[in-house]
Image (cartoon, one colour):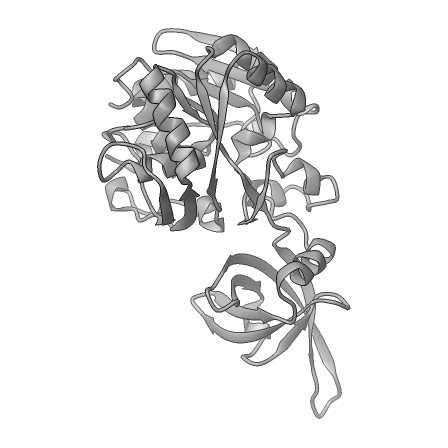
Length: 356
């Protein structure tokens, strides 16, 4: 299985740099094994049934991009250097792993000043990253970070424009609850209060799980034999309540529909041992590519993904590689908007045929 099997030509102008407003006005491609329908996210109730269950990732994106100054004294007088930091993940001891640019401009033990309230000391540096400890913790840290930080937009958006105040709302789901992600579960960005109410009124259930999406989600696949690729690990949790809700829906004949690849990867991780959903907590590095046996997910709502990415491999596993190529060709021909701020797809494979 080669990386080139998951490549396609994507016009640059189809990469969305702002989301649709209102959220549910985004377009939505609905695909079954033999039909493609052009719709909108607000039309989702028309494609679901009472008793279906949407699995939603309630992670909350933190404003993980920081810009600060490193001050240094010397014989020629004081100097300062601009330091750009992207927080990656917290360590158990309270420190943070972070990307720092330029890394060569800082030394262990030095302090970077981000605002009057927020500073960080450099504990160590290795492999292009740094380990930082901040002067604040808990709610005080969250408040200072909210003031000083910017949303960590994906590289393909950040290369076109800087993050701004709009992104603090746009790049956050309406049901975000548990802080910790440095990338949004973007399929969930299409949900707003009217759409959630319409789904609830028709008898669709909601289950909340948590997967803190890491910056590694944007790392490219660098091996031609994709089976040799190793995924980044991300922390997630499925509570007893969430597992019970999913299991009960399955017993009642309803469909389990994760919203986003993050929710799908989490519930499939939890079912790997026994084949059945169960409470779960820990780090998952599950890698889903064609040939994977899906245990829980019956359908998937997701955005349109990068060529040659692990997410293209996941949707190819879910619908079949040939069918996904047809779906993406249709999306490009009909000018759907791609990636994090782009449009949605609802993938409905034939029952029991969610793999190549």
